[in-house]
Image (tube, rainbow, N blue to C red; front, side):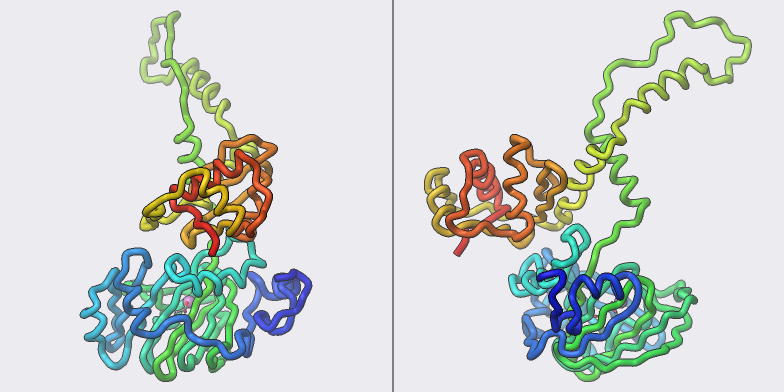
Length: 377
Ligand code: SIN
Ligand code: CO
């Protein structure tokens, strides 16, 4: 999507303008964001996804004023016995298993992939929803099947019911109300209180974004430092003097520790390498499927010229400075060659006839054999 071109997706403003005026700032209702929107799957198919390990799924059931939350994967029969009212089934990561869901998510790639999270699809019967709450992430809520009434509030009282197994606001004071039809979309920045109530059977598509807490980021960086840590030797004090204050930590020991800690690499370069690995690390439930009958290197090279390649739906690939990262790994290749792989990361495909060097072909072949990418159609 061109940053300066207007688009119905954002309500006939450009991504640039949307980002300036709304992103992380204020809600935006977009009527007919997806004209003639058609659901990507049926209710039955969504329930089947909730039974698969690849998608994280939850079922929230409300009985009177209390909530119960069950986590998937579910058994198909558990989902057959749902009551007529008072529940919501939420299935995350649909983009990892359904091409159409991935393609929908990709329409939001005016935001960097490092910030895009997943496509969640929810299903609720008339009156269903997860109750009034706020999220810590930006989200686009696209209406599919049926209608949904969204109530919003910019209230600052965000206290939650302590005993509830999901985040439900203690006191929700709606200020605005919208009824969304299929194809309508609501953007919410983090922290805006909202409540979505299904009007008839309803499916909502949440385009979710990723924003790690700063605590998570720094802890993960420390783990990255630890992964690479190789410090030889042991503390020594060959000229130790006898002490009359044995409880005192020797200052020589503090100096020795400090001098090692000062050698840790807090450089921008190391932070870049950390971020690339961290942001492309697949979720723990993701498994790649290598091709069942893999081609030889030579047949792969000719198929690559003929058909191109595309990244598997589950592959995360990013680049920064001279580095390219894929699925939690940093690519170790000639620094003049690595940037040539950037278009594959940005567009998630290389078309037929794309000029590739011998070392790029080697790299692509290794990823093909690992199941990270597929030959084009
Ligand atoms: C839903 O689709 O039911 C929940 C979406 C949300 O409120 O974040
Ligand atoms: Co929400």
